[in-house]
Length: 115
View 1 (cartoon, one colour):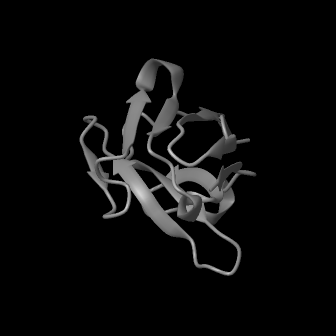
View 2: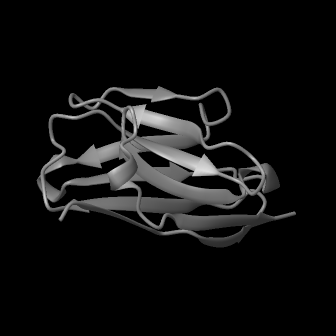
């Protein structure tokens, strides 16, 4: 069974930082482009950042300069470092392939930023 398990979320004040992890089990994602997505209540899911098999990142306009995506292929893990967090970053963060596959959605990890 393939699983993507996210962790590292929490409650932080504006300006704070968090480091999210997404660890895969059941198969290797080494050769695939992976992404972090987020969804706030009442809003559609949006892509935060993606990273290809070679480690090259692409950021959405709101994450560029504040967030850093990375991957450790040996650990089958993708990371998202969140810096300078703002209340509008409050959402559930999940990882998946690009494009996302329905069967791979995990429970996500909640990030809540207080003002």
